[in-house]
Image (tube, rainbow, N blue to C red; front, side, top):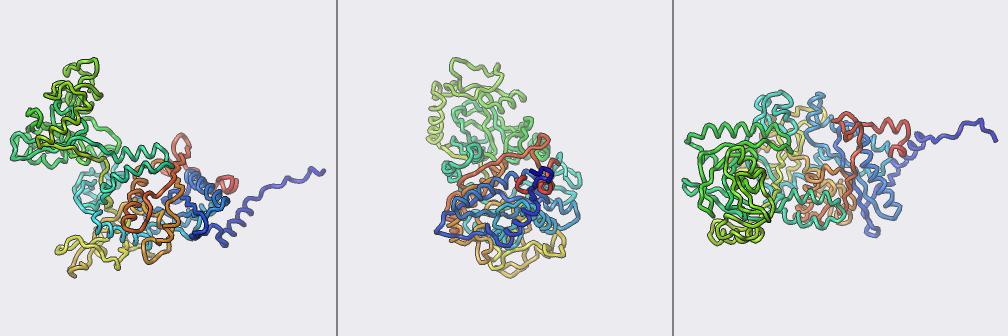
Length: 611
């Protein structure tokens, strides 16, 4: 036996190049609907074209590829597409940083990342590739927006945004660093501006109930969505102002059993009644100063940051409808206008947040629910008692178990005519307006005579200016007169286009459906295709998308169903949250600077080994 010869080596470079070229020309993964075969739709969350794919992406895509290949071998007709979540603030920022147009930056990145994915040998049907920044994609999104507007699921209202006076523009939350503009370091201030909203709250009950259908989802994700939707039942009632002209403060509480223990009222700094309470009083200047400072501090805080509790007395009182007692009214920095009514009846003996506030400002603590075998003393309590018990100091309800008292108090409020049983939701309507350039234009025209007028469907898409080479200016649309100056389609008079663009979650909320008929150029979706392929059988992506993307996709599916485009209630039958690739103790990401490029590993070991 001759042992002098070199051992045979696996020549992965030539082998992989051969087969990848064959796949490119013969397209073995291209599929079409076939009613005679069982279908299987596997999908990974599509990437944002940031420039390069790293090994964190590879984990996600490799899992999907394994499933796709297995199902093909089992005889399924497998749809496994790929595309690009291509609009958004990061692209705009990166383009500004590098002195190029967002379109040029984005399409260049797409070309490079597509090459990376093909070099990995992933079994995608590339004929279905989409990029959400292309007019042929967002044209249909604009049409759906107009149909939702006609259906009453879209509205416009004023909302508070982050505003930089120096740059004269709205900033996204992530562009505010320590309360200052990321670009010019000037102080960011809150500003009221109009914005567009989708009425996701109209679907709150169905979104909550249909969570029970998602047996193929991780329980953690289902629980997160259930908590985010946040259905609460309790008492809605009014506290009349002591010296008002019929004015009242509307409150909602899930603890009506504690209403006899109210010792102060807390209002959100944005509460509309504050102006009435303080105007012309000795407290006006101090309260206005407090509100201004509180709103500025909100700009500096992280979304999950709990503020140190502060408040200020308005000098006014309201009346507890059950006791007739005077209740001082405070403005408090921890009360949120977007939750409930923006007013909280404060019961410091039985709510820890209220307890801390009361101790800080020397307000009374009055126990009205006694725990079993104990007698609470308001003066000596070191923390609130938030558990169950029996009512004390509660009029005719004294002696009742708290659970029974909740129903009895609501019944009494309804009998007396100042309250009623009520259901409230943590879920808020979806604000889709972005005052940025790199997004899908909102197809509305503002006319002084006719109001907000939908762009006629035959005039869609409303395209971004300057996206074709040579790339032009990409300033925010409100700075581009050639874009916003137009003619009202109803009266023919000069008018202005809407200059807000859509939140990029709009594009990712229906892309999985568009994959079924990505080249359809005469409508949103092909009915036969969506009926065959949807729902997605296996969806794969990060748990960080558990709330917004997945919730919005569920809402959009139901809205498209009600518009007649779909016949399903839920978009994803099974969900896999694939976990993270960790390097240097942190999640692999470009922002962390700890990415490992698969190109280097492919060159050294081959695509099969990397996968």
